[in-house]
Image 1 (tube, each protein chain N blue to C red):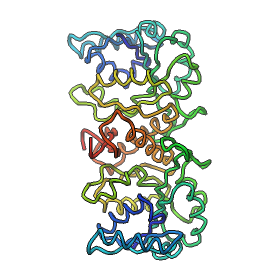
Image 2 (cartoon, one colour):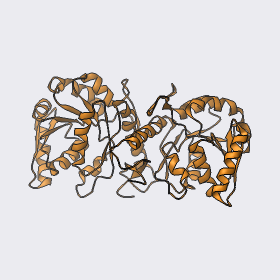
Image 3 (tube, chains in turn purple, brown):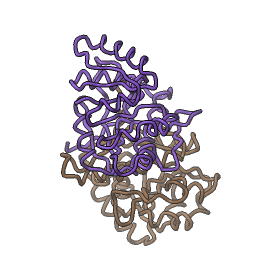
Image 4 (cartoon, each protein chain N blue to C red):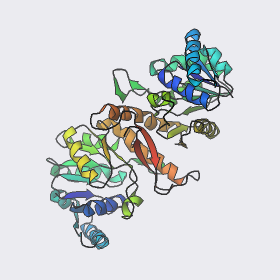
Length: 221
Length: 221
């Protein structure tokens, strides 16, 4: 089952492509520049030595090549325009929105869209026919790209379609992380906003770490 | 240095009183019914055997007895009215707001005030003279009240006054937990909203735990 990663040439997209390909899921990187996507795919395949299942395509071809799930990993400034460019190809597929609406001038702040969050904005733009699932917002791109590191956080998954969320949770568990159903799309207002709090901690001089994630923790787990 | 806990007769307030008193900080429980506050204080002191430093007072007397910090732990429905009743006593003190605006009919949802969050609403109501610090929203009351359990989460602390946040972080570290500066008061929109996500997980049949918290996690910590 191939997945597409749009914005797959950015750090988050590249890291996810490496991780999913290594776990056995073929990945099609999508970019406005299909040649650049193919070039990045070649680089990533070289890193994986053998498990060479990453390819690169222009955006629409990447979406068409995905069997069921399309990950949106573009910068927030390209969020809506990218969805507009592919929306007619999405019915029958699940959109996984990992975009965090960071403030343009200050990545320690969110600048939420009028819809409340990126996930809700995507759902409003695509209509009820396409289930949108918010996930993977809080995973450090640096960690994703260091394949010798295990991923240091749990993943909170939200959206209004339970069956779609369950498929996404199953996909994410391929990465060796725990993924939790964190409720409806409205909860993306919280989950997306965790990322700038982590960025703030990472750049603080008062903590001994630089790539924080969050974990759900319980005494009886 | 005595602290006051308003709404100290509720489960969160009682648990915090036990934990702070055991750590050596005298606690004054404040309640609209001062007699009831004293009764709960007696019960808690009996649990602590010896470290009997919890007392109970009517709301205004409790605030007056606090040296520097007042914890607001009332139900959200009493948030603004409680602040109105004590606001003239607060200048010179720090208000620690731990209230989560849970939806009246569904504790798996937030019902945020127009100000954006409880912490921001408190800051707007009290004015800039009184620093408001949001904290301790995501700590399970059940865990707090089980003194043989260590507290299973980190604490995210937010507010617009850095010096006040640093004092609150120092206070919270008495409980044996890590507390982090999570940025300005606006971040309470995220931090308060984590609680209903944890409540949702706790009541889900798909997880093996009932008292989840969150931890900040990093590979290089």
